[in-house]
Length: 155
Image (tube, rainbow, N blue to C red; front, side):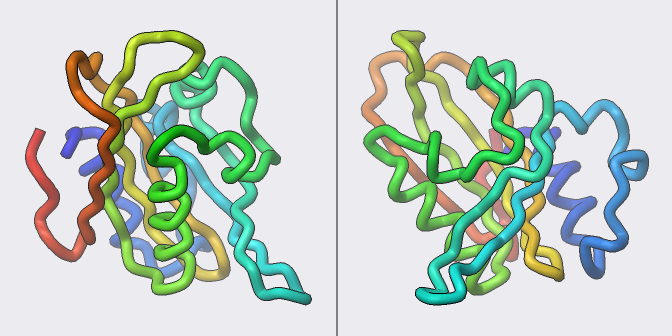
């Protein structure tokens, strides 16, 4: 796991709920990689929607567009997009913290490893971090996830 993500995950897992979160407490070095999602439920179908409440500058720059106030599902695409969305929904439903990694290609740029953590905090928010890694040459589109209650893979 990327050290920045490990620091974000350790900090977030140590919080009792979202009222204990403060950007000042996590530190300016990690803020560019941080995201906060509001977990919204459709009152008629009980379907989960994830609204981006806060997104770090590193993430916005990678996607080359502002993502705040957009639905997560509006821009998660690609061969493993469904797996990514299912992982986020799993965390929203079960409150199990997860580490994820996939290979992602945007706008004709070379494929890159994208690694993230997501941690549920009451009431109805998912906090986490996302880092874009090295170019993934000669690698097929892949996705993996591990519960943060277990030791995630080392980088």
